[in-house]
Image 1: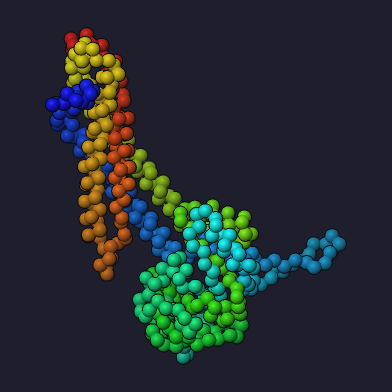
Image 2: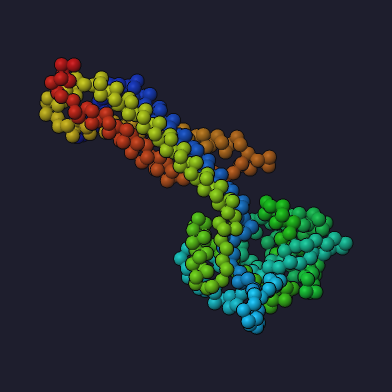
Length: 406
């Protein structure tokens, strides 16, 4: 019934079938190794994505702002060193920001570009007075960078010229609720009474306490920056390429572009260390699986010496004998990857079912990537074939006469 199969495959399957116990043990070992790799990879990837999502939830991937103003001496002091006091930085607009936005949008890898006006202000309601960061936004575009509509816990996602969005902590400090009025005052003496249309929770107490969102033109009027934009916010398609893209932006428009990698250097180093740990774990587990497969196949070569000798005497070439054991290694790795991936999927389901936050939501989101299963199958198969190289070469070198005599 297997006459259609190549000779090497028939011999490999027969050898595996005759040593059922050994085959079962090595497949179990390979399955456990694959399960560990897949499970830990999914957990670490999910943790990493969760950390990035929470850290970058309230900020763009790249922040573009005007170059720092520098004070310069106005006259030559005839060789004497001038002592120039660093000037106080003031809120200024990015020159020709609309043109710069078009240039930035054309840079490969850039996803969203939107202007904002951001500056210091005071939130006033009755006797309560809090220092806040006033940010003027274009709602539709900005929501593609910071998911404010999804984070509104009271009221609605609405911004008109008379509306303001505040965080949960600030609402608590001011004793304010949706529909209440509050006054926004800026250091330049401008003030405006607005209606609280929504209260958001970005999962960060500091942000919820200090951040206030209004319409872009409202912030321009309050901060005396009519028609201007103090920042350009950029998101990129690949967050790990943010630093490279920020350098391209700097070269293209000559503005100061700070990526999240630069502004969160410690976080970036921690994520890199996590990635290195994950890779090291995969290598260590793969090495253990390879050693287990190799050791079993070495024993198989010793046990099957007579059969190998007979095959060689019947005309089987060294290459064919070698292929028999390479195929065995590949089959063990492939079957082990199937069972291991199934075990990992079951463990991940249990993880998400049992470990939850106090509010019943998952501890962090884990998404099953089919590519991970394919990657595990390919890696396990290649590991099995690689582990079989030494036993296969040993089998191919056996002298048929000596092997038959035992």
